[in-house]
Length: 286
Image (cartoon, rainbow, N blue to C red; front, side, top):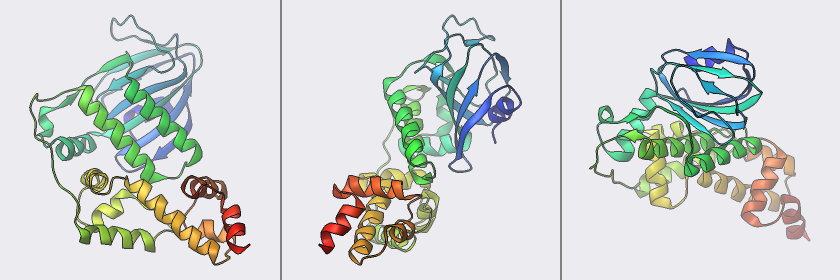
């Protein structure tokens, strides 16, 4: 747990939702009101997104005239110090990511020395691309709260945007190149197929073919045109269709294919096949 989280837990803030996607990534949605919070130096970077309220939230340690509000962002790099005054009720999301995670992402995505890039400290700013990405992540969690792979990929995309648009970095850089070969793709397919009933993480797949999680996520999409999460979901629903044709119950199919609950299964299946599992099975056996 980051010091940011520890500080909020010892204040009046309440964690409404928390998802630890890996040892380096955490997403937490907080509520707070009528409070003063001081953050100490941390080993984690923090990106804040105001969901509701925050109109009277101010930063006290700097002469900043702007105040918070819905769709406002704050970026606090590791080692930052800050003090905040919260008045009326507010809801906000924090994305925590470790310094090592950021360094490895920079190395893999931009092929530059991580020591040459630093995140900027920013208070109450807007960025349409980041805002849309964070809203999509929060929406996904509402529907699929236990999908770790989806969280890892979404957060990675958000952090890449931070590195591109909200950091100091060299003007000239080389792009990292590479694609997965057939042997690597076969190993990934085989692993997913044999673990459809379990939670599958990018760390497992990366270890399988001896790549870093960052590199794997990037080159998989470059090679296949879809993300790892999309690949896993595609294999889940295809396997589910086979079991439905074999007249297995929808509950058994949902469990065998690794869906967290039947409504999750039904939504994913309909997105892929255009009909619900029930209609698919009924039509096949008619």
